[in-house]
Length: 208
Image 1: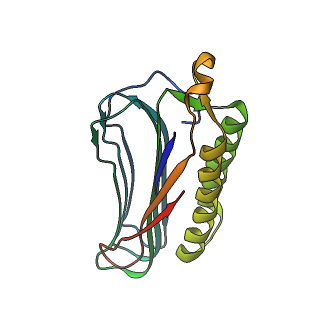
Image 2: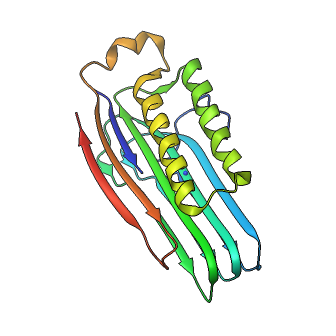
């Protein structure tokens, strides 16, 4: 059985050897210049294997300016294999306005943790889809969209990413292809900040 935990943040999508159990991904945007835009994206694909699954994904947008836009988007995909005894993913998004006038400040954090019995990687098709999603996120930098419009576009792209992870993962060792077995369970958790200072919201959905 494979367990996907999507906590709704590198284009070398080929999976590397699993690493430590506490990978981090951070998107931080700070804007103190009037009539300007600061747009930061952190997009990471990471692998871990062992008893500890403790990834951290954060997006922070801080604005102290006039007529400005500040955007931080953190997307973290973690491929975890084995049977961990410690499982504590952390996903946070915070948007802060300080002495800000006519500010559009957005922080979005999406974290996907895929738990499988054996190490897995994206298929060639999955790599292509992930690269396309990342490229679409990057194009948002020059889109001229408002904060609410950006949230809508990013949510749609994250839905695509969720589907890719559900259908385009294969065992790293082909001889273990039959080791996955069972049905896939998915839980989605999203965190996003808006233009209210120190604001975040979380939704939970359980699907089997």
